[in-house]
Length: 166
Image (cartoon, rainbow, N blue to C red; front, top):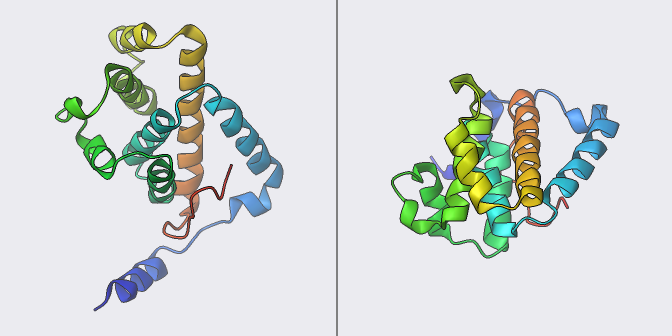
């Protein structure tokens, strides 16, 4: 069996449930504007690492496909993208600022563990100026919203080309 056959079989098992952007175009346009506003002032590679990590935690294959491709297009290394799922054991691949952003991303994304711990927030606050931290929190919040659309509607990964959206 070829990879194409496997992918076709899997796609048939999990069809897209709803083309939400087509049925709620004003919400989609607002999300695009919100996403654009949230990334202002953030380093492109850090921004994509945050989006990838949240998407890993939320199991959003569509967003993982998109943001790993965007990260590579922004000059991110394959090695750092691969290690992101095990960042705690691979800390040496990331700067202290990136580690603070990744840790904050996990705390904001996995709210079932409780509130964002003070020590996580304080580490991020030491690495980011207040305006940049506000943008980072906005970017984390926006990717979590995108992930909810992607997972709920079963958006299909594998068709994204970098630069397609924004």
